[in-house]
Image 1 (cartoon, rainbow, N blue to C red):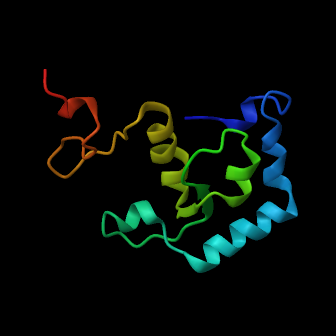
Image 2: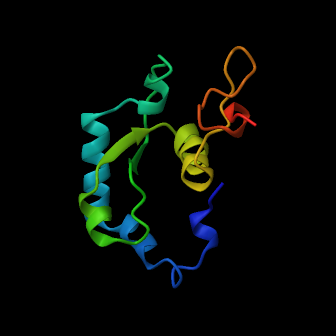
Length: 111
């Protein structure tokens, strides 16, 4: 899991943007408009969201940070599934059949 606080702000100056009132207002508006986790809803689970997440990682691009599309996520998806998707290109979620549900998971690749 990516730990944003473990990396010094000097290396990631955009981390301080999350502390600005402008971001807090934007995140609050996102959660007010879309109070449920979109990743849970894809699984037909109703779960309250608590994080406004950039759909496309901004990687310090101010335009993407302030104007990029957001999605609402629950704590579990924001801290794990979304990070896995950004870092590896797939998630490790396992279905009821015991197999990975993400079509991009290496398990589904043909030899």
